[in-house]
Image 1 (cartoon, rainbow, N blue to C red):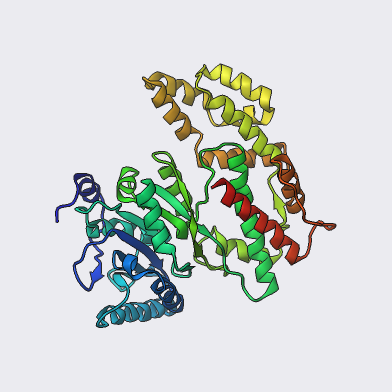
Image 2: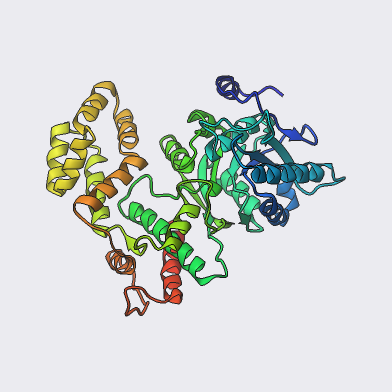
Length: 434
């Protein structure tokens, strides 16, 4: 089958010729899940078992691609674990009637390893997502959906049905699935992941409160998009860390990010050496007791962001000088931040290069993107509004948005049961806000 022109043009610019997908039959699919796997032999078996509980109707339409990867410099133990995984997956493919359609990308053996400079989770996702474009059935009317997952996750039994139904019924182009990190048996590990989830969900809640277009989660194992959006943004990046943040941010600049609330991904809450950011490193940091982890950004920072976005995204466009005057009125640190970010030069260029109001609005969203938003919150934290006790900050936030907080707390650091109550309240708030 001939690929769509935009897909062919995109693939012609990529350099994935070193890798290929091992697949039992040359079938075509409507949905493709891409799973990077680095030393994940045992976890992959658990993931497959979890996926197999999904509806066979949707499993038949879905290809699951495992990108088994490592660097040449990785230890012999990692390479041996990857070899075991490759053997396991190949044996699974050979079964007479396997329940799951498995594709395998060997980015692990001697001449297939990831390059030392770029090799990491971003590159592994990119290889899988790029090659996946060759296996969609572009002739049917269904959405062609690229789904990201990680090998140390499990999923709900309605995972595929919910994603496919939501994307096709609502014509979604991009989104993310609801998530809940698995709680470990050890209480310290439980506290670590509760702390991290509160941090993640509070930040997104703060962005939604401020009416930021970047008020969504950016967790790699929850990301979804259709093939058109993937190609339009130039595909996945090669970052060794935070590849998920930048991927979702690029998607948000071309389409709406929708939350899939009816299904759930359960990421691992283990500590990890794999990447310098994210769940694994945050858990490691908590368990090291090197700093106070029970801190959140002040709500005042989000209030500044809210006022600035209201001014900046007003349909009445004005000069850079007028915007800076408004910024100074809102908060002097906001003004200083915009000066540091060369706002005047950037805005003057946007005005001179944009011919329509629609183009200007698009450029506003691109300039004040997710990364710049995070930098502003950090700037306000460091210069004006220091972080606050986690549970004080949550109490203030709930009060501000008109939620009655029935949690009875008389300590700065409450029991794990009360911490869980705070987390559950944030989850309920997300469900209400979408």
